[in-house]
Image (tube, rainbow over all chains, first blue to last red; front, side):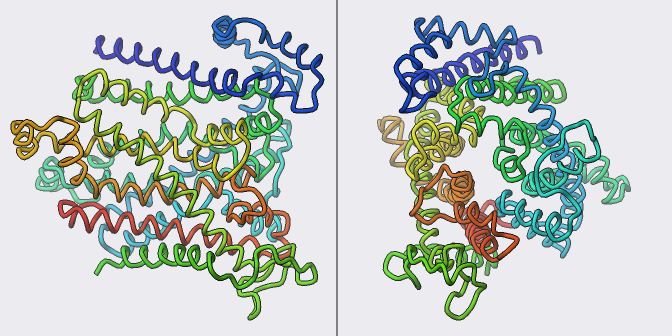
Length: 314
Length: 271
């Protein structure tokens, strides 16, 4: 186990290092002069020179890279060019919206997918199974921003149950939660469809195993075998998908946050990209990549702790 | 009879037919504006109604099918064209440094939030259909590399591949002559799935204004333009959305159906 963990930590460090090089290259090297790119075509040479000085662009590339990474490690993400506030502060504010939104969507999608997957697997080949398969096919095919538009039309404009967009801030928790309901539903639907399919397949696969047959032979009912034995073993693929979905939900909410005008992390990146605020883009992309790599790392470790067979794969 | 496969083939075929037909015939020109006819509900003259410029939505949908299918198809081509050789090479040299580099490279691309990077690419290089294709295509590379490697690894242990080795064929030649034809099924199925994901991605990018630019019609941009009018005329948002759903659903059903039909081992197993 120690060797496995060591191997994983080394590969984690290597992944983070290469990822940071890629982000740095895309943002600071490919556009040519980042200062000129940020200021646009009409900027005077003096303004560009001043911004180059502020951003430290007159240093050599390796120095700039080290400065950026060093800053990230000490929590200094630079200062946003358009908002004129520290990026760390911006990210913190936005996470206060995006994290609850992602968590809400995840809870919702699990709450939908778990019973759907269980019923489909238990009633394999029957009407209920067909209904779940049909619904998941549809759920995967629906673009979530279109689903969001339909939700707004039906439940915010016609129904007036929820606000059509915007976010009032956490000072009024009830209003804030109400504002997050429709975005969370729109985000959760496709995720729930994927999760239900994975759970159904995993359960059916597990139900064919010998130990389930043994349990059934010992007199356990099908429902009990499903809930007590199969569900637990089917959780590994399900947890993998959940881990991937959480990081996806943090970054993938870009479009949904734009539909609902929600000031989350996704909207921050989108606005920073369109406003050419490369300082914000660089740090936020790196934070998201860091989150994905960490989630993968932790899932790997968790599996190895649970299932000794997986340790040898290192 | 496989109802899923048939339904998938019909839906995908319809989208393809609409795209091809739009090359030679459209009910109205996509640029034909008629402000007096704006936001008309569906009628005999305009099957899907008109948009806020009085343009015929059916014509825009047909021309939009062309954009969606072309972007997704080329993106799949990029993914297959680069991913499959990487996957084959990794499998042919299993456990070598080459395998390690290719697989770690794959993991790295997977670690980047694809939508963020797609938006970044289109923002740095300018929004256009071509940049959308590149952005979507890059994320198809690791998918095909993985599928090709996994399929090839299981074939490398088989006797006829060993026989070819004993007969003196090189690893590259075996990969092309014996491995590739035998993983073609896997690649076609994965291709259909990536094709449908590409259509969703293109719609998303166009929706936020980073895909095909006006005047090129695009389903995603039609939805973006419909957003402010959806309360006045719901049909402007309904039809482009339905077009996306029908095409993606059709391709997914086609992919699932092909997988079951092409792989006899899967028959009767978990869907």
